[in-house]
Length: 479
Image (cartoon, rainbow, N blue to C red):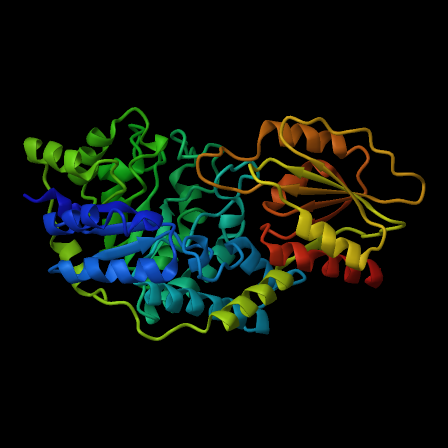
């Protein structure tokens, strides 16, 4: 038994030229494919095609592109996160599935597919089908389309249809739903405590809709879900969970684990987790740290593995990159348009005098310069104070005719474990003097600011920092 054919291994795009011989050796050993992290679009395109030429059956060339090709590859377009796309489609309390913003959202899915195909990517680990019902969720947040099953189901299905119509295999994740958790599964195993009735009523709905939409792949999360497996086994390794998704939900596509280097596999080693996953009926082991050692371990134990379904899936993948060059300028303009449409304002916005902006940032790199420059354009006399990790908030002296604005920069990303304790503490201190709060990330970061006006951009790209002051000015004028 060749266990390489059940693995999708990591490929570092920035090192693809230097490490090409290593990746080629995995192809010659029969690896099912690769998940790409980083790199430059044309370089990755060139070397991925070389790897495809070495393979007897088309390789799975996958990537986490929830926010567009630019999320991983330089030269690709970076789109707003899922929650921002949903926000762009909302007209007040309504959800307009046929409006111009809805057409922009669908166009962003088409752009993602076309840029992915041009880069040689044929499988995208999206959409995120989690429903973010827990404001303290450290890893999903704005990656989800929202908090309502209907919106997540609708947009998830739309993304699946558009991607797959344009030659990309979509992968819904993270079954059965990572939204109502307070732990990052990159770090440790979360527990989803809901009973089966609640799961059917909420968490499972987007996945049921995805199956009906024809999704070709499903990623099982590293989540303990007693309603599906009372033993506490992560569903990604659970025979009971696999049986549920196959028999109860009628899904006959590809089942893939979340990455095996994550802490969410709990008490199990990568090797033990891989053995359990294959024995449970999973089709693909994602991101083993050492594919060669993993293959040798599985072969020694003669672990059952039936790759027929996976081989049929691979035969249906395009073996070559799309030759049509995407219209990148048009895609970037679409991203800017969606970014502006998504910015959400709640509460009464009033700015008097030259506002004082307190920038709270728990990221490694400095952020906020673009935002302050744009604020100065729309609100002359803007002053700014930058507060970085480890620094206390200085005494705020705003004066009688000034407005204090607190702007938070805190990205939701793997291994971070959510917004830092330092940032949350400083935000609580600032909330006492703030007149307006802004998040360039998760909207839930503003929950501790009470009843003052809130503005959320959902992400911190320069285009979001440029657009927000214009939206804020319009909100102030309208009131």
